[in-house]
Image (cartoon, rainbow, N blue to C red; front, top):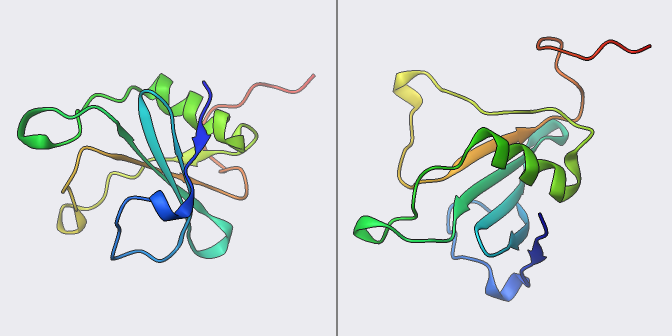
Length: 114
């Protein structure tokens, strides 16, 4: 999967987050990269197609998220998707967020090294 960098002057308007570092697009996805604390990168991913109510269409698969993470240069890093406490839910658009971590997590499955 290939992505084209979007020049900063064409980035989507985002008035609440000045940590955006890059924006990428292809025929199916728009991905924004944000610098979070402690070397963490947040990938905000949405489909480019619009659905009902002029909202981005929903339905990004786990497989697509993995391919997107890898295509943007994070194939050697773990990423997590957070399901927050009920009081912290913010659900204003059909987008997914992956937090790419600078170090591997100490949980999850790993292939055994030979």
